[in-house]
Image 1: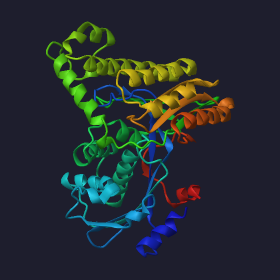
Image 2: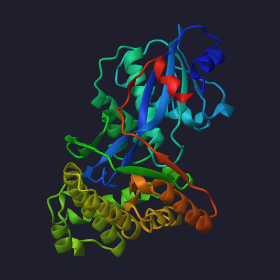
Image 3: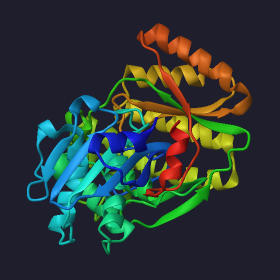
Image 4: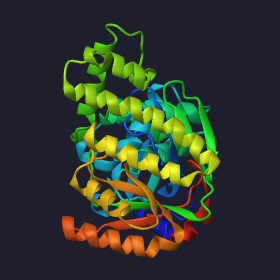
Length: 394
């Protein structure tokens, strides 16, 4: 895919653009707890979003996506970057520009922008955070803005919450921004303290399995789960001095679960508290390279998301169940927000082909759709990469 010549063709320019890349992410363990003050354990993957940029002499911002060519060039002015549904995907980069402007950063000339993502859209691999963070890094470098990567991460989360309208936590933007090659990140989403753990995948691979059921977070039950957790926290705070659900241990939860008014709220908190503890155990197991125990925690996580948090659905449950029946699979779970999207499995390398074929057959027979499978490496977070990086796209 010749992004360079496509850029020059679309924008009728001979000038070579600057190139930026932000990866997607998988979450190894620790789902739906980043907005509950807990620990998450993501890793950034070699699929993501490329963005090419050239300065303009006026105040126009022009957006083009290779993934959605039917939308054509979307043109807006720096004086009006308000959310507009008809701007579709470009609301994500628009939001970043708008929030940087409101924060007082000097964005004083326009840009021609071309985006290309090789993350499957709506698959739960953080395509939105990838677009947000590649835009943030691009703007910081193009306008020489004195803003740290951590501040960009916080701003991107605000865009997701207040501009796009999804009550997500900070995990996606943080992992996409701070990812490191061959490392997973244990992030305390309350304090933003983080540690890296090496992913030494010598005899194993993390297989990404896409159900091909698209997710649309803003229209899903994601916000409903957020509000259930908020309600549960308020009920627990009538007796307990906690700021977040993840301040609880499992023992404290069981002692105080009668404070919660419904079985549904008890199940939600059961998942949140147990998942936080699983994530901390998973970090230690990865450092010890105890793959068998790590795989068991992945599977426990999925069952908790299925039964207590109820965010999986038939596609993800079929995929995970099919994977767990295969020899050479140590564990499997959904990754991301759920309601479709992707699952991951920890598999032994010498069983990979057989596992993929068998899971595909079971999934297709049960669901009536084909799945997609990816083997990704773990890479650095969002950064400028240069024109040479485009050669790997073919």
